[in-house]
Amino acid sequence: MSEPITKKPCIDMCDFNRRKVCKACGRTHAEKKTWKQLSPQEKQDIWSRILGTHGSGDGKAEKALRALYRTAGKKRSHI
Image (tube, rainbow, N blue to C red):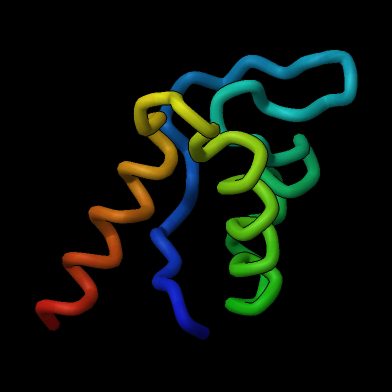
């Protein structure tokens, strides 16, 4: 794995759209419910998807989700 995984991508702002995807973290309701049981690779796959959709955008400032992920990477590299 090239990038670190935080404990979870939740930023404590749950609000689901019509497709049952959290507007804040980008995970589906099922992904949020089963997060603890997912393998590290499954979590990384979800992170890769949600960073693309909810992490940042061209010409936009960083969103809380990408900042959370980046901070986790810094902490992990100091261990």
